[in-house]
Length: 40
Image 1: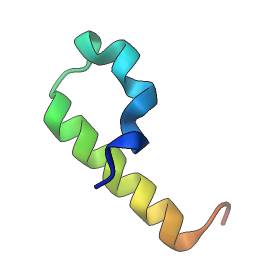
Image 2: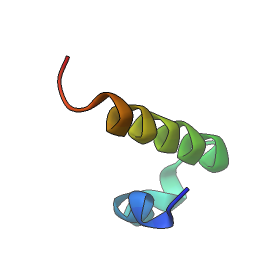
Image 3: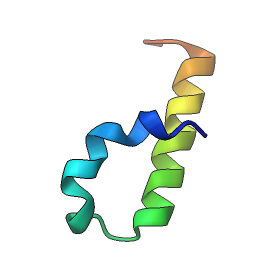
């Protein structure tokens, strides 16, 4: 995964529970959105 996808999350890094899992989930969600496109 590309690390720049999470640049906006770094500001709240100390408040994220299960940080590694959260980053993986968000990264996968971004990949799905990129594959399917915006909207339904």
